Image 1 (tube, one colour):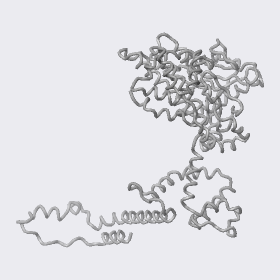
Image 2 (cartoon, rainbow, N blue to C red; image 1 turned 90 degrees about the vertical axis):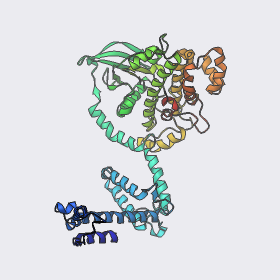
Image 3 (cartoon, one colour; image 1 turned 120 degrees about the horizontal axis):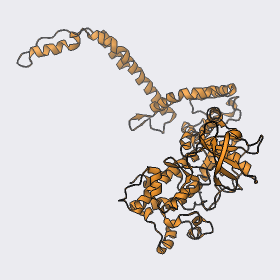
Image 4 (cartoon, rainbow, N blue to C red; image 1 turned 30 degrees about the horizontal axis):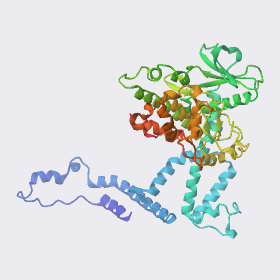
Length: 530
């Protein structure tokens, strides 16, 4: 800093350079050097003194920044002596300061929402940490009156240890299903969604037209909005035990999905609800009608995969490609969209538990996921009971439960349940329940002998043979391929599709791992090769 400041002062006060003797013509042409010596800047009326006055403040700023960077590096080295202060030519403390400056406005706003008692505690704690240099733990006799137990002081004896704990806290706050996103969703996005996007319908304004689907707990009808003449899809609960509770849970799940725009793109567009009679046990749910053809209906047609090509591409693909390549391309497109939607659901803490071709409806140029009656929100425990499992046994994985039965029920207080949710999710990976079902859908699209719902019957030959093989597709294939089963679509491109199927349709290991999750499956080379 001293050198740069002296240079700036000298440059500012230095007089113009005295004229020098003209050099010999033999060595240097006088006229050309006279122009250079006089200088273009002097010809323009700019003297060295003027230049010095302009550059002096800038040089002083550079010197100040250099001193601040040196001081920050020194403090960083003192607090974290075992960590490098420079990685690949990038200053670690400088980068940390830049991140902190960028996050400062958001942190300031979040801090303003805290109660005054919490703000006072944080200010006092931070002041004590700064005064102690973040390295000196206090003895019991010198503990702060605001921390009599010594919990805070117990972690201030080692700066590297504090950094590690801060890193764990960051992972805990941001990892799936996400405490910070959950806080924003529950206290901000929920209110915004209710005001801007929730539509209230009257029973008299919705004219039922015909049945689209039927289930054990509900019925889906095509309807028309009398006021706007637009087509709607209306789902009403049946008069059976548990149907009303599932209908209420599905309304909750659809509202949560609507508040997550990236996820909502892959699901049916939920509009709102209405009561058929006043104080009904459950509301009727309303979606925009965008289509009613399911993947289950298309894969059993004789013109598959041409019918799906026309649906998602708007035309049939090049007929020069053989059947296997065209089938593989169609399955890749559908599976990519399904995994992306499921991965988004898992990121916000929702496990669908009913992934199957009948719940993939063609809407526009893509298949969208419907029917969230069996879904569970594991961020706060809505529609989740560790002793019960809502599923379709035709497409469920061998574990039948999204988490082991020994896991206790989530606490009734939702903030408390959300606090422990990241730990439970990281330990048991409930999202792998859906990825197995997605793998079965993929197999059905690629293997002709597996198309049709009855083939997936849990008491049928396919599931029995798969269970006998320990849910190892490679062992199962050796048994059925000599019988004429066609795996050519999975063998396209060096067998990458087959490898992906084997990593999705398999058992978990004793650590509850051993199967690809939906987000991880999207990174498989099958999706990144032609």
